[in-house]
Length: 197
Image (tube, rainbow, N blue to C red; front, side, top):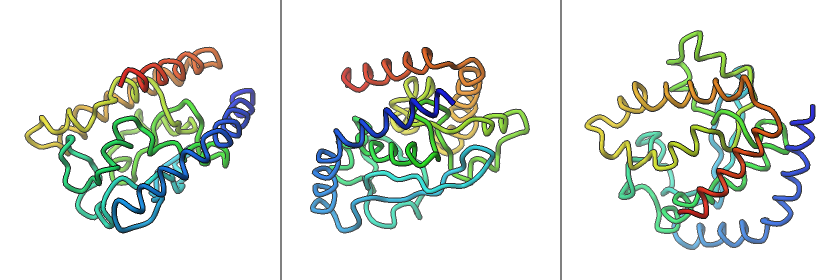
């Protein structure tokens, strides 16, 4: 209950402060390439219920049909402004709307697409006991995920076999012992990572 109150309070403040900035970025997105300002992607949330995650668009229109993973800094599907937004995670700012709606929390396991969720074993599915988040321990450690995938011979296989299991394990370990103070610690480290980039 305390976590949910904190999520609502923090999200309202964050959205109110950043709304003009996000709108400005959205206008840049529209002028940079043909397509919408925002994109909505189906992700799997708490209790395996799907929801629509919102982001600023960083890729060319209909790019997701060519693959769900972004590979390296030179993925041709990513727009010019998209590279900037992805580097600093600015495309994820609108997800505070998902937090306000109750789809997500500020801190929690990152939500995944159904294609990869279908590969989870029964132990990994324990992650769905928790509301997904904008950031968590794995988000900080895998901040440069697309660059790691670019080094792999088979990026998708590497993601499924190596990166995804590690992310799930870290998220589960953290979520089971998480409290408001540990969440604040994760938020602080996320902000720290943001400015270090």
